[in-house]
Length: 251
Length: 246
Image 1 (cartoon, each protein chain N blue to C red):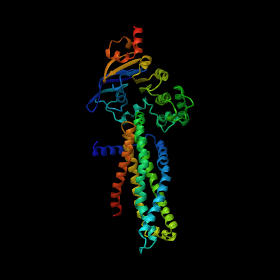
Image 2: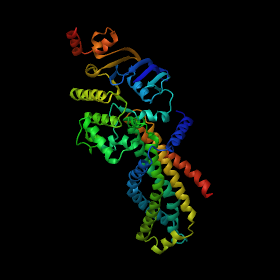
Image 3: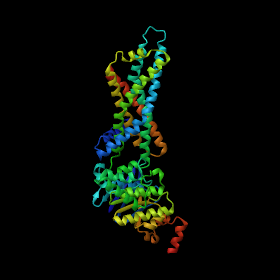
């Protein structure tokens, strides 16, 4: 579980996050939604300790990370798996080496055990026979899946994803969403996903935080969205004709 | 950012380079890889340039000595000193600042803008130690070898040009390169080379590592890396010469 309380983050005079509080629950896919520029990525980088908030607390199962140095965050970071928006796979390494990398750096397994684990994780994300391909040789969807495999290879307690299905076709996007949800349930992880994709929200939104201009204006589940009378949320979620129609049908 | 603030940031960056690495065995492999990528792949370029510059230095010295009373073996002597003292350690280092410096800055800059450096940090790996330290160690180890090879290539180029054009005989050239040889001059050249290797690797890495933005900024970082490395090399060349030779 990750609890954030009264997070304020500014860059210069511009306040990006304005007193954001929320609890990301264990074993659930927690979604952070909002328009581009609403502060989702900044919030995620605060969770990772890449940005230091001006005030507030970020508590990982009882441990507040605000104010901790990189050295002190090291142990916690090994329990966090991160899927970046573009995958952030290392260009100089092939798929196998990318997934193997965290194991080589932190595990005490033998080389054979490491390779078994890598193959297991790649199989888990439905990737086989791609071990020796380089990131430039695989599709966007495959890159995301390799990134997920790399993120789960050390059995993390927390999985953080920044727009994992952006730039993907609807079919692949749903595959990625479902994969993330399955993994979350299977390994009972605390998963936080940044997205502005409404299909993802309605598909896997077990707990949702809606941010607008740096403030949390609504939270709930995917079923609460339909019945919510929060105008900001309604304007954001039901901006497309398709979702307006779905809403009408549901009501 | 002010110059002093940038310099302070650079010093903190350098301090990070010398922090304990996560895995020593991984570090050795990375140093070997960087020796191959940054050093070994520059070998042909360095030898090629040195051969021709050595030849040109010989021909120019010979042209300047036309009709003078000076003995012809001085062509070899002048070529040796020009190559040993300045051309190989300084000019080749400047060329390497262009070749290797832009390579380092653009590769680190690309890693920064594609979040690969953030990925390392999130995994709990110090990206400076992991990415920059092997480059600095590799260049400081391999560049002196490259420069020795350049010296050798330059003298061979000079000898070939001198003898093939008939400006001096092979015996005169060899007498010249042995004449009044002070071994400390070679030590001075190696000291310069090691310092220049450190400058190329660290300054270029610094500019690449702190790239912000996209492809355009990666290009700018690459340019800044080459310019700053070259300026630092030129200035430190003067200071070292003053300290070591005077």
